[in-house]
Image 1 (cartoon, rainbow, N blue to C red):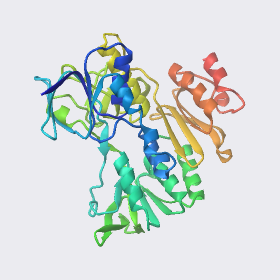
Image 2: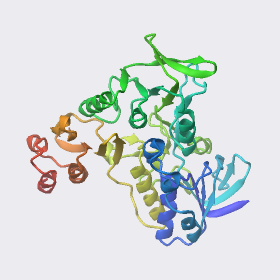
Image 3: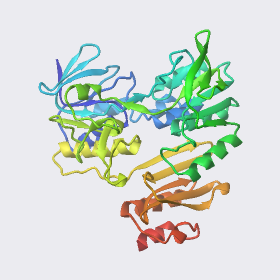
Image 4: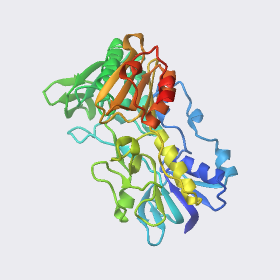
Length: 413
């Protein structure tokens, strides 16, 4: 049986950062990382952007070159999925039957794309966006395709729509909510992106539920909506969230979240199992920027910052996870940068003119700045971090005035 002092399950951003932070912190024991993909750790955000567009080769997505891991004595096991955890024996079992022992376990598995559950969902021509293999399969399926239905109007769906619309393809986005990005942003930002996509030829079906995937010859030929309309399509892309990959931990007895999903962790990213940590997309935690609510954050920032917390905790330092959340999305020539969490806001101020394609939306709760969405407005984003971190209360008129630097309000607050 293979054994390591620290075993990291998951070779994404969080798993890689945990290994890096351990070595940077002076950890001298054995470190083994297990990934269920054949590749070494790589960036995922470019998959739905530069990699799908063909603008960036896969080698440029690698988080570190192969020699980096060898030089730091981080053993890699690729193409292996962990299917069972024995917390008492501190042993893992892989899908291949391989047994791996651990002293400390770091669970950084992220999640799998949430699948459609309607009739026709298993037909050919339906694609999800999560891994390199997903994008390679999608690109291989594009020749001869003219009409694409994108199910889901979140970041993934809109990013894929933007890339493929630039190819001159006919794109229809189907979203169950009455606006895109409804789960993560206010109405002003949603309407702005809808307008931008429509200007590129993208059409929308908002407030539309998918009833069935129409199948012809074993392949998806359209999406039937609950009102009976059929959106004709030669290919379907689905981006409706992820399912946290925590089943082995749950079966081992780890406490898991209810509505939030994922495995519960404390402020040090410890699970309820002895010597088991969890981080990233699969970890549910009480977040100060969500008013203490238990949530999961699906972002590179969250994965990396949690990984650093885990490494420092293992190294014996009193490290608490308290990072300011931030996200980004590139669509066409628009760079959206978000800081904070806008859920629960009671006021939203538009700073600048959306028609100029450079503006910010400032979200307030009880007068305090809790989040900003910044479109092609880097200065607002940088200064906005201080506003969110400090829970600054500022004059709404000044917040909304683009002539007033946010940096000055952060200082005053």
